Length: 418
Image (tube, rainbow, N blue to C red; front, side, top):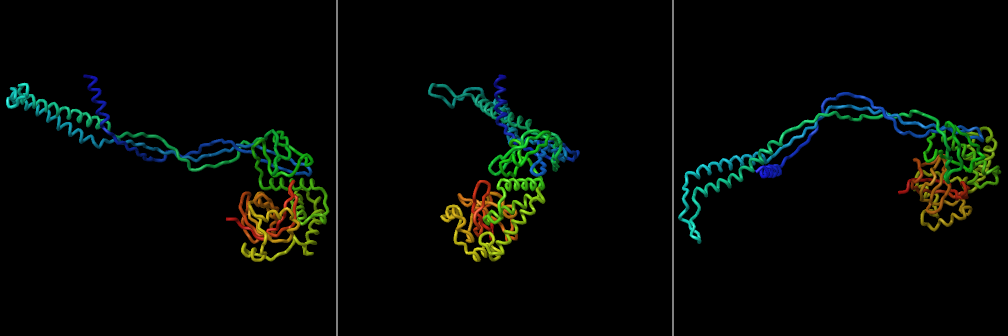
């Protein structure tokens, strides 16, 4: 009996579907506060040059973050409803009452067999009282489960409220903190890899120019980059320019090609930031040679062409006959750059070394070209590494860049390539 009732209850609960609706309501503001956090920071460097020495100072810092937080009260309200509970309960009540009525009426009927009906074995039909009581049991079998389903559904419905506190971040403020000196080997990283290192003791180290293998533009401690401010980066670039000049040695301006002459002038101007008066006379000699060639109407990098204001005007004014881009057959002509001096060309490629104030490198398919930009250019925008560009230019000999000898071009007009 107990097992039967338990089975009936379990079946009834399963047949009583419950719909659940959850909503959240925000309450009043409880408080506003600041939560401090300390996160991993980075490395910051400071460089000073007393030629031929480079002093590097590196500090490690954390990031102190302050989170502004508002705390609210919040209510999570869960509503459970049973849409079929009323119908099930009403059906159960009606059929159960009907069962009781049928059972009561059965006692008013005859208990004698029904002689109007006889089967093949000679037995008469069941008495009317028995038939009525059977229908009473059928009605009761419908009513009781319906009552159970409706009752269980009503018991499972209702509303529960969960109160809690929630936080909302309004913003954050970061600042560098806990600065400290570091110890280790600082890598001096150039375009072709490391060119030397500086040993740090309590965050300070020094290296001589003679101990370095070439120019560099980045500092790193192991695999962690060291950040420099704008002044520090310019100082580092100036020191690297001086390194290149030392590696090139003394060279008479008259013996240099147009590209080499302009590049050497740029390096001397950059190096002068850290070497000062030592480069006044050599730079004056370079500038005098540039002026002499320009006034003499020398071809190549010093050729004065018409001024243009758009890419279309540049194409019309210079009428480039050679096209340097990936897959172009004209790229083979770059093997003899001196033969191209003064020729206007069309170039399309990718910036492989960021275009500085007036120099850079373009990757044209499998070839590279060293480019000079005019001091007063008629186009706007900066073109960083990876930018796709197209340009009209005038070829101007060749230039030694690091360990490479590259063709040189003077840009007339450049724009992004679409």
